[in-house]
Amino acid sequence: MLALYLKFVVPDPCAGIGGCLAIWCEGQYTPPGECCPVCPCYYKGSVYKSGDHFMDDCNNCTCGFSGDVACTEKACGGSGR
Image (cartoon, rainbow, N blue to C red):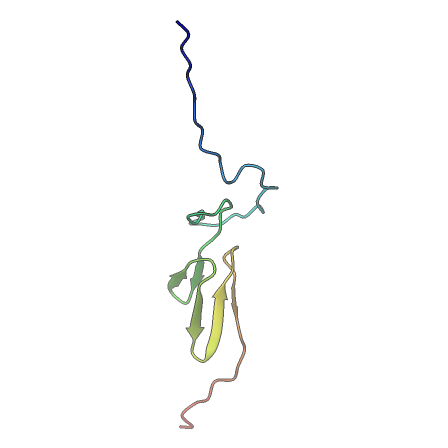
């Protein structure tokens, strides 16, 4: 009697990727559905995920994949007091 066994392998979605940029940071993680790790951003006592957009007073900020925060540099209006 001849037995036939089939093995099903779920393909690795990250196989064949040209490689990830080397990053070193505390709290490095790989987001769901992604292949390369990213760094969280630490900004004024808060933690943000890579790609998050947030406000700092009247400026728009973005958390980059390497843990860097980039913000616009608008002059915020004061109360005049």
